[in-house]
Length: 187
Image 1 (cartoon, rainbow, N blue to C red):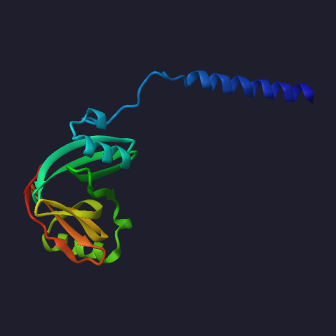
Image 2 (cartoon, helix red, strand yellow):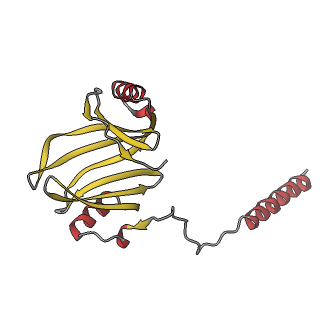
Image 3 (cartoon, rainbow, N blue to C red):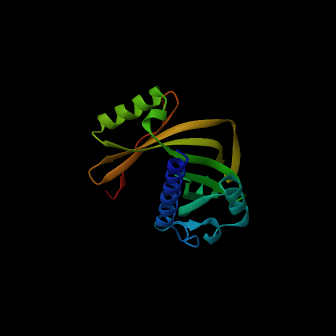
């Protein structure tokens, strides 16, 4: 009986060792990044903007950077991947994070908000696209960054019809904050 147990243990050890050898990996190989991603250190950002971004999202890999004027303030719109989540943030030139956006599924949208966005899509005979949750703490007004009395959560949905895309933005109760405006899109 002891011989039989030793034989089984030896066979198990051989199987484990053979399996481990078959799964050798190159430890020097770096994980693949998605196309056109860069690290924040590779991006051209003012130091205050970079510091805020790195403090809030230390493991992010950026996909896209836009600089634009909003309410008289220069704002950096950064699209990035944080782990498996696709996110976006707007950071003012003074380093204030105005808002951040997370791509979500319809299961995480409040029912009233989702119903309103679905109704608008149906009314416009448009296909529903990407859903996002937007957390807003500041806005720009008259060349200044203004803190909101309390943070707001908004939901946005991309609408597609033909070669056009638009977006609707609603609050948690389904009240429209931003009506769909068509833009030339690539499908």
